[in-house]
Amino acid sequence: MKHLGVVILILVAALFSSVAIPNFLVALNRSRQKRTMATLRDWGQAFESASHRHPPDVDGWDHPLRITRGAKGGYTIRSAGRDGKFDAVIHPGATGSFDADLVYANGSFIVWPEGV
Image (cartoon, helix red, strand yellow):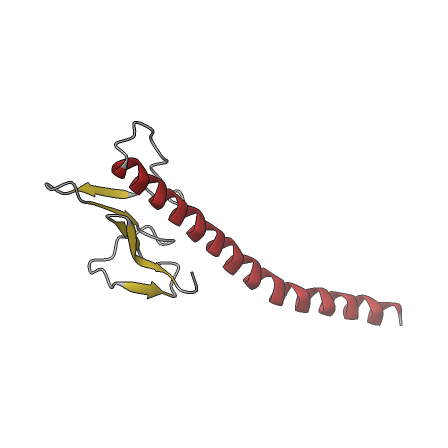
């Protein structure tokens, strides 16, 4: 009888873990996306105000940002997302993937997380 109680306790703990861990990982990646969006906005504000402050050079996943300035004063700031690989093609609009690039250009998001 004692062993049955231990087995049931282990099964309940395993069930709880199978639900809690994936939800935790999604929440963690959403948090990193939001931090990345804030960093991209900070860079945009720094460009637009000709500020001398220097926002972070990395996104929420600690991958380097890609920052480009155009000849006419425009700019684009990109985060490679969770996978750290920049997409070859930018698909404007909302994205549901943590691996997709987030793109901020000339004061607005070109690619942003779904639900934001």
